[in-house]
Image 1 (tube, rainbow, N blue to C red):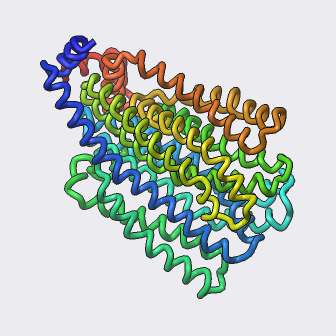
Image 2 (image 1 turned 45 degrees about the horizontal axis):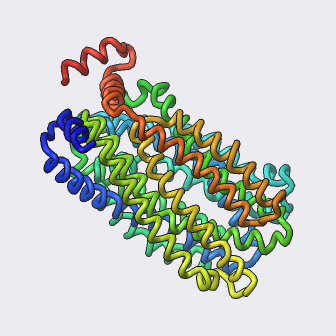
Image 3 (image 1 turned 90 degrees about the vertical axis):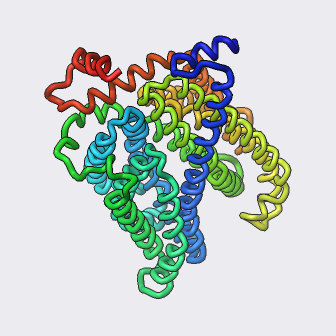
Length: 491
């Protein structure tokens, strides 16, 4: 096996076990350098949501319920769609950068912006009619009416997020993460001040929280645009606006639409679980505890989410550069890293299970229930971390279409039915709902693991080069045989 590894590395130009060990260390350094700022970025963006909820929480029960409903509706119908569509850039920009087709990164970003901004139009129409939609689904009239107001005020931030996601992935795939971290950090603290002014010093009241979120998103978008425009780090990848961005949109959609389904199917499943908790006996307790678990999971997931983005970048870069075994090594290293963090974090969650509930509630019943749920949540986080890294590898390779079917089967044919079985048939309550999600993660992670173990990395590198070089040819001249000839000439 050791000899086989050396032979494989020879194909990428490494001729000894010493070179192999050196590559492992170098890869680890690159991944830590990437994933650290990405984790911080995720935490900072989560803080924007947390700050908003903190302000709303002091304005009354109806306001908090309505704002929570509006936020959930906005995530399910809008923000998750944009995040999913933009993740196609993980493949396209990452592989183009690895292949040194730097000018294509700007083209891909512009094309993605155009598509995402178009998608924002029908989403805005849906958000403008949120009250009627919620009423049609049986929501209480007072909550539906106020949630509809909040969602309409979210519309400006929708267009900001569409551009921001494309900018973020454009920079991430070039390994430019520290400037993004600085910009996100510089806008998070002022967000508190903007919220306080709009909520308490104007007549906007609770609507000021939503407006403040939109303002912060647009400031981040503007700052990133200025960085991309004037930074020397982007001078070869951003060459100005081009008409080429309007070419080859169908091929972009062939990757972006499965990317959106891959992301949305997973995000939607957690929202369905929260909804199901309201049908359990003692729904007030179950919903409260499950909400605490979801918020805890969101905090914990910042780490594997950053690792997922890092491995996606490393795999796509190396495949684009025609270094298949380096891409395999990036996946292996990141799997070891996420298993270690999942184990350590899981132990920490179990040890502090009896005190964690007090951070959210003073009710002893809630604190005791949270303590019982924490070991299950720790197991969930462990498997979810592995799945996050394997999903990142899938995006780096361009497996989004397969990933969408995997997520559909794992969460909706296994996960949610298992949750219903455990919670309502076996009467396991909220713990049963989480166990159902763990079943989905096991299925999802197992399929991705098998795909990764049996991947022909040389073929993946070839597919990446075909994708890169064909996308750099004007759409009217794209021909598979021509792409193949160009690849051979470049090689």
